[in-house]
Image (cartoon, rainbow, N blue to C red; front, side, top):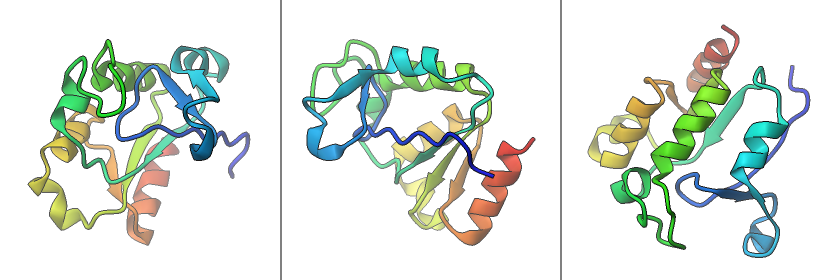
Length: 132
């Protein structure tokens, strides 16, 4: 059962701000810190995306392709994973392709292997993981 669903967006990797509408992503943002301090820690978090990006976006300050990020994306993702232990990543790319992209390997490791394909079987496995 899904209650209190919150949809927030970011481009490629999570950094210091998120937005609710892609068309207003430059004007109507929310600090990621506020998100981390607004929602209870028993919330379940689901990231959806292909996880295909430059490894620098995950690992390096200044690695974002859109702005200068003072901290690497991995720092922000680690904060989410610490605040919300029930967290998974759903990837629409075919699972057989995951090993060919360094950023996917990095995110799978960061998420402790909790990346699932966006298929019926993958959704079932991800929901079982979130239900633990």
